[in-house]
Length: 243
Ligand SMILES: O=P(O)(O)OC[C@H]1O[C@H](O[C@H]2O[C@H](CO)[C@@H](O)[C@H](O)[C@H]2O)[C@H](O)[C@@H](O)[C@@H]1O
Image: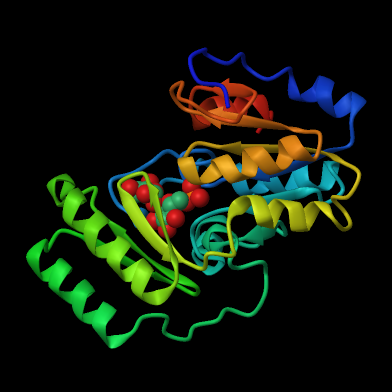
């Protein structure tokens, strides 16, 4: 973990690609697109899906989007890019979505009470989990933490804190587990993995690629991280990837 020092920018992408067989694991919100006020308020830069597709071809299919969003949600923004996608923080790995309800009546009641008390909260239902966003109502954060932690304990789920959001999902899934699973088989096995992400939930991905001989790239301001390099914002990510 790099705590007190700022991190350098990564070496130029073209140079790395010239000397290594690269695998790229890309977070979505805050990495490929700027953070917005609401989950559906994001803007996908013109040409980005086409450029990701071209880059994926150049890397022989060794790019995966590894997002906290549901895969179906990502597809509405990127369209038919032909990229491998991991969604819901690793719980969805291109498998049929499990849409069965994950909450008991007690938890549904607790969630309903929370959203009634704080009407600006946004609830995002995913195939394997549920996210409560408090960006529109930041003063609700302590109540959201309490209720979501209680729900997680009751349901046997993990409660993950992200950017103005708390998410419930399976304990067994995280971005690091997903990356390790992908790295075990073709077309990723043997490549040097790079994980680019901005949020605390991306730290599992940074650790996984480091264990596999690769590097994490933190996007955003300096903070304690397992990443080796840092880029300031999604625009710098696009420039680094020559997108
Ligand atoms: O793993 P990611 O691809 O970074 O997804 C993480 C979460 O991103 C979304 O929420 C975040 O972005 C929103 C839009 O910029 C922002 O309004 C919100 O405050 C952020 O938490 C998404 O809605 C979640 O489902 C993802 O898990």
